[in-house]
Amino acid sequence: MIFRSHLLSMILYAAFVAIVLSFLRRDEKKSGLKYGLVMFAVMVGGAILFGWLMYLFTL
Image (tube, rainbow, N blue to C red; front, side, top):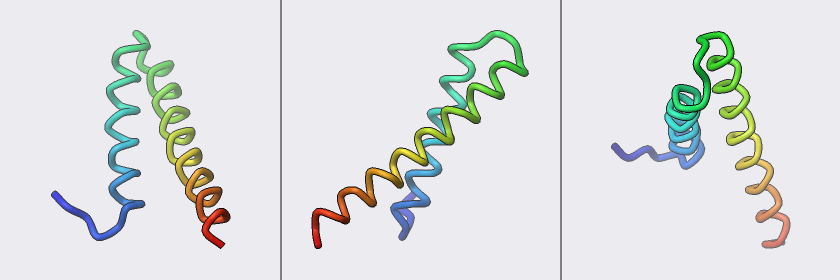
């Protein structure tokens, strides 16, 4: 499965990783859901921030 957008690929990867980590790290459903959402947000936000940082060095 190949996407034309790297952003879409990164978001899909972050979602899968967040789901797996939430199942592995938390026992309760509510705690696992919160942990998974936070991990997803951190991974996507960090990747976008890092992408903008790399863009600044290409100017």
